[in-house]
Amino acid sequence: MHSPVKYHDGKFPPSDLDWSRLVTLIGLANAAVARYDGLLSAIPNASVLLSPLTTQEAVLSSRIEGTQATMGEVLEYEAKGDTDSPISSKEADIWEVLNYRKAMFAAESMLKDIPLSQRVIREAHKILLSGVRGHNKAPGEYRRVPNWIGPKGCTIDEARFIPVSAGNLPNAMSSWETYIHKESPDRLIQLAILHAEFEALHPFLDGNGRLGRMLIPLFMNQTKLIHRPMFYISAFLEANRDDYYDKLLAVSRDDDWTGWCVFFLTAVQKQAELNLNKASSMLELYNREKKNFIDLTHSLYAIHALDWIFQRPIFKSSDFVSTPQIPKPTAQRILNVLKAQNILKVLAESAGSRAAVLVYPELLNIAEGRKAF
Image (cartoon, rainbow, N blue to C red; front, side):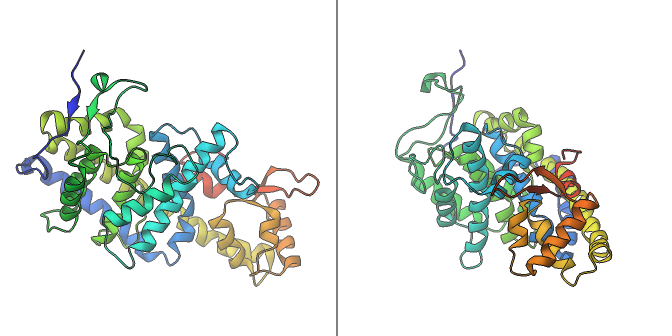
């Protein structure tokens, strides 16, 4: 039986990266991020247009930790909006995804007033664990006991990795926070190191993986790599989950910071390219549908309707009809036109007092990268 790998005391930040292995990847990753950000900064309402990607990132980051919810299930649950707390394992998974998105929005809002810091991370952690699995594991508070990573139910001797001791954690987190604000030869390398160190410290009893991935767009935004904290990396990490964990483990086991940075730069480049393609397709769809919605509905409220649907691609018909931006008779007529043209499809029929649930398939299929609806 292999002995657990233990946290790399005294080896953060790394002092001897092999820059010759990294220089080409640094150029490729930074160029891909710049191209994506060029499109992101040109979209006047990016938070509306890219709303499905924000939800998908929450889904995939949570899936790495074992949740099973799909983006469609999350959006349909949210659209129905009739449960105050999860009543099944599936709903518990959905709540974890919704909490991830709420925590990300809260952190983005905080960064308007304060820099990325332990305070931001702890506040995000409180929201992440609110009302879900882990809610009894000291939300917003660093652990005061040992923890370890390995097969479910394993003892510390059977663990794969043992993070920093609880006694050394406060000083280690202070060093981590200090490194956030240091100058660096390359910001993506700095981010790779920050992410790996956060995961190795494992400062909370639960939620560390999701918070560490949330850190990625927040840091990219704070350091002006992107104009908004809207970078979606979890698709690559989820698809390469074993390699992701192995490269993180090798940092502590073999002092292989360079190998981790190679993996991380590759992830950033590939995801920047995928993000660019999806965002471009969404912008093209939006611009095409602006004319289409106007031509079909002959309404002054056509663009209001389009924006509303882009932000909520699965929704209850009653929520759309009751939106204050559009008169109710007009909203109902617009819905009828869009359904007749198969732009919107019925996901759940109305029954009694329960309104129908509608879906905008073309937008969600772009986000999923396949015909999911």
